[in-house]
Every structure is written in structure tokens, then in C-alpha cells.
Amino acid sequence: MGISEAKAIGKRWSFCADGYNAIIQNEFSGELSKKWSDLLIGNAPCPAGKVLDVGTGPGFFALLMGSMGWDVHGIDCSEKMIETAVANAQKAGIDAEFSVMDSHSLDFPDNTFDYIVGRNVTWILYEPEKAFKEWLRVLKPGGRLLYLDGNWHYTLNEDWNAARKADEAEYREKYGTPPNSYRGDEKTEEEFKKLLYFNNILRPDWDTEQLPVFGYEKIKVTPRLNEEVYSEEKQLLYRSVPLFMVTADKASIPSKL
Image 1 (tube, helix red, strand yellow):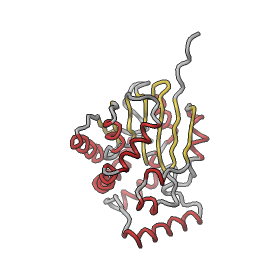
Image 2: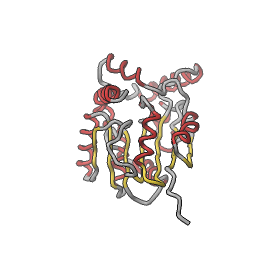
Image 3: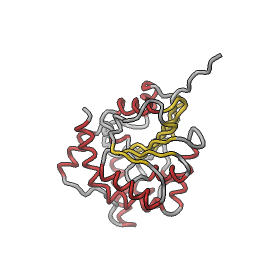
Image 4: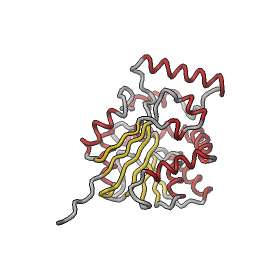
């Protein structure tokens, strides 16, 4: 597994680039941008340094970190997403570097980054153990991984499924059709869904159990952040899907006595 999976996922997200960017642009404006910035810097391992934005998409986290003085590199397996991120950075006047790259196989030396951040990216991993170990490899000793995600396609709980449908129905009554960034063909979407490792795994229980096995320490899980970082509309649409946050550190080099 590797190159073909990354290409399939990248193809799917290239179809999403324009629609997803429209959603992101709303987050850049107003108080949401500050809420996300406060969350990122409030959980950072140091005041400034080198940060990797994994699955950067249109560059939301990358641009927020760059605006706060961090040396930023954003990666995504979608060429169209990277093109969009570059354009957004140029428009905002923010110096950030972007590359098309598979998050499971990074083209960086060991101990490169102080901080790795990501939002809504771990749910699309096809080999999470490989990806998390790669992220640990490129973190500096004492560096930190932060990611946010949800059980977006978990369907094994009937009550959960019913609650999500009820939330969407209420959303439609108040706001109309929910945003959908995907603009591709059915075959591409089906191929993408077949690759998803986490579809039938409840999180963040999995993360709490597995991250220590992969070599991380000081793992902290915030089970729900919806009300802190979502707009009113998004809080309703995803009311039954908790947005969780995980932070995990790479061990520092032991001091010599």
C-alpha cells in the first residue's frame, strides 16, 4: 500500500478543492479565525518554531500559524488543494511553503519540526500506524502533535445514526441544504471510501490506546470542542458528532548527569 492509495485520496480531494475552499474562506473571516488561532497557539510546545500542517487542504491551519510567526510547511496529497493553499497564502501575504506529499511517507529528515498540526485529516488515513510513526519521526525531541477530528462515517450505532439524521433535518429547516464540497464522480467517491481505515472504529478511544504503542507520550484528549470553534450553523449540523482533539508529545532527549 502507498502510492496508489495516496493518488486515489488525492484525486477525491482535488474534486473538493473549490467547494472546501469556499467553506474555509468563511472561517478566515470573523471570530472563528481567532478561536482557531488561540487553540493552536495555546497548545503549542513552544512560542514559535517549525510547524508541519498535515493535510493542509486550502491552507487554513498553515496560514493561521504563519500569521503568528511560525515557519510553516503544509502538505496534502491533492495537487489542487496545494494550488489553492499557495494562492490563499499569496493573497494573505503569508510566507509558507507547500508540497504535494503523502502523509504516510514524508520527505523530511528526522527531527525536523517542533509542532505538527492537522484538522479532519486522520479519518482519511489508510495505514494510520505508518502515518503516526512517520509524524513521530519528523518531530523534534520534545515536539508535539496536535490534531482534531470526528467519527464522520461511523455507522455502527443506530441511535447515533438517528441523531445525525435528526440534526441534518433541523439544519435543513433553519439553513437549507448542508454544504457539500465534493464535486466528483461516484466511482472516485466509492474508491475513496473503500480505503478509509476508521469507518468502523470509534474514536478517540482508538487514539488513546494506540498512540503510546506508536511511541508518543503525554497524550491528552479533549472529547468535544464543537461549541468552542464551530459557527452556530455548524454546531447544529454536527451536534451529534463530537469534534475531538488529541495532543501527544515526542519524548525529550534525557539530560546527561
